[in-house]
Amino acid sequence: MRIPWLTPGAINCRRSAANGDLVMSNNDLMHAIDTQLAHVWMVRAFLKHSEEAAEDDELAEVHRELYDFMLALGGPLKNGDTDEYLRLAGKKFSKLKRATELFVKIQPEVSQHTNFSMAAASLTAAVTEVGRLLESARPLN
Image 1 (cartoon, one colour):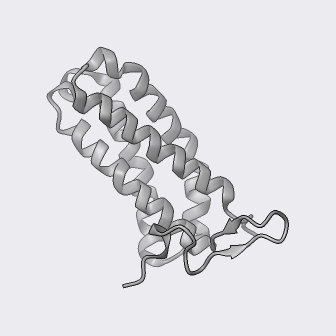
Image 2 (image 1 turned 45 degrees about the vertical axis):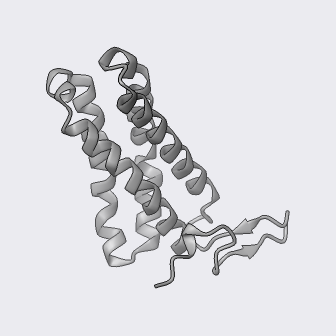
């Protein structure tokens, strides 16, 4: 099984003629984003099943927004439709980012337990990387 997006210097990377940076194919970007979404999914599952989510409307909104982003990308990923996947990810990224920012903001009020602070850190790191990957995507025609 080949998993190039998990390894720096992936097999399908090439060097940019402009600056020498490694550039991934859009297909590898799709899979790299999906790898980050595995982390987002785990945070979402943690939040959804927490007692706090049942009591806090904003927290429930966060886990619903995380789910909506991933649900939108599931079909294109399953169909191997890289262009549609990246188009939808770019279109919906602002909602994912806002949900992350909301969670980081409300997390100390919801719970100061280490699990919640680590969930905020994990979600922030994964969403930041998704944003970085989306910025590096080659323009779609």
